[in-house]
Amino acid sequence: MKTLVLVEHDNTNMKDATLAVVTAASQLGEVHALVVGSGCASVGEQAAKVAGVATVHVADDAALANQLAENVAPLVASLMDSHDAFLAPATTTGKNIAPRVAALLDVMQISDILSVESEDTFTRPIYAGNAIATVKSSDAKKVITVRGTAFDKAATEGGSGTIEGVTGAGESGLSSFVSEEIAKSERPELTSAKIIVSGGRALGSSEKFEEVITPLADKLGAGIGASRAAVDAGYVPNDYQVGQTGKIVAPEVYIAIGISGAIQHLAGMKDSKVIVAINKDEDAPIFQVADIGLVADLFNAVPELTEKV
Amino acid sequence: MKILVPVKRVIDYNVKPRVKSDGSGVDLANVKMSMNPFDEISVEEAIRLKEAGKAEEIIAVSVGPQKAQETLRTALAMGADRAILVMTDDEVEPLGVAKILAKIVEEEAPKLVICGKQAIDDDSNQTGQMLAALLGWGQGTFANTVAIDGDSIEVKREIDGGLQTVKLNLPAVVTTDLRLNEPRYASLPNIMKAKKKPMDEKTPADYGVDISPRLTTTNVTEPPVRQAGEKVEDVDALVAKLKAVGAI
Image (cartoon, rainbow over all chains, first blue to last red; front, side, top):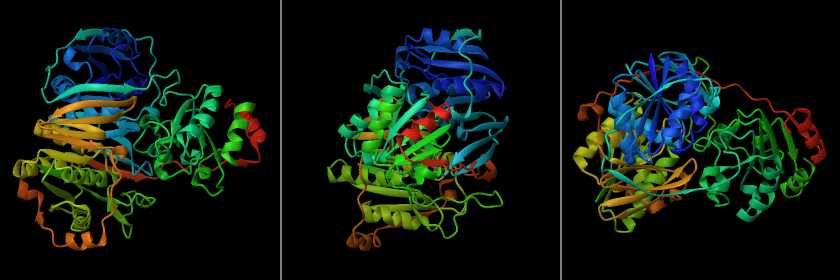
């Protein structure tokens, strides 16, 4: 089986999310990677070095600079004449593009897979991860998104894929890019951070969130996450949200501060290796999944923790 | 212009789903069902666009069992003008739903379809994108803010790194994210009025769409259960414990 992996990148650097997808694809067959962008030659070179990648198709075109689904999907669909499975990371980029590809191919997508059981059978979470379904696809071509935390990352060195240029369908004329507000941060990205400090509604305001959570994260070199409640309340931007419909994370250590632990939040972090919970409500559901719990007022406990770690 | 809003009847988001012991699925017998939360946001956004004079009519659609009527009545009580129930007891996959919606779009000619970004039962996150592909329309997924300006719509999207704004020619498909709005509750008078609003009943066959599933679910299991660990007394004990497990 020949697979085509959508490389996640920003036209300069390949993102880690790609590496788990390569691992999933390699369990299906030969791995071909696809880099879609503009001025993205260096990403093609990085992808070619990933262990297990046989070929990298690079579509370098001004019309593809922002990876608009309307322009990318027809290109992917045309490449699927010569590939059997398309795999994208379950990131907002992958989730935007893959279903559009699936519909163009008249294929039912398999979203957010956790494992490859055979070339047509996969497991995937449903009901916010409260159930795991095994699904078998009868479609000739497969379109799949891959949960990054469920597969080991392929090595970024050791591969020697050949790089080939491909041309896209150009501008669809349906959509155009206007602007982007991307937070520039020295902090590790949530999906690849080893430690995450996450805050909830109990913080009470964006000032308190900054005052209490940020120093601890700085001290630990951690990424910062948040519950939906904290994002909805405007304490932090949307890209901090961990949960069923936000980011799915599985760091070495997840420190949940003032987070009660709604099932939608647990869905996004319960595969973390060590979960620490600090909450003043001893009956908060977060304690049912926490390895280490501290029942305390976070406004006292967290500054003290920051000082002592 | 018309706005089409697909809505899905799903397990209520406050209910903890239980897996059936025979592995055939999740037990939905006697479980509270509600409108998918993202679809409530879609209905609300359509109503706000109508209130702002950007739209004339809101049509709510649901593909599902007879009981999906209740979900449509909720949409009507919130402020949708009429409803279409495409009745089937079969489980219809996102691809099948998108095909049915594409046919309804052909008949109704809306300028905008607002879908929830995902349903909280199967968590697929596909229908809106698939519909846009089938129609050859632009798609504004995971919308945080939308603004209609003449023949186009600007959609600010929630993406992994922050926010991205795209401009789509109308007609287009938008899928809603959590921060787009806070849906209203239907008032009692509006719930009464909703009972008189028109609801068409159709079947997938009326649209000539093949909804036979492409995926077969062979087994459904509980995820591995995480055991609660221990509670520590104070911050010193927490730090000691973190060091003991090599976390810091």
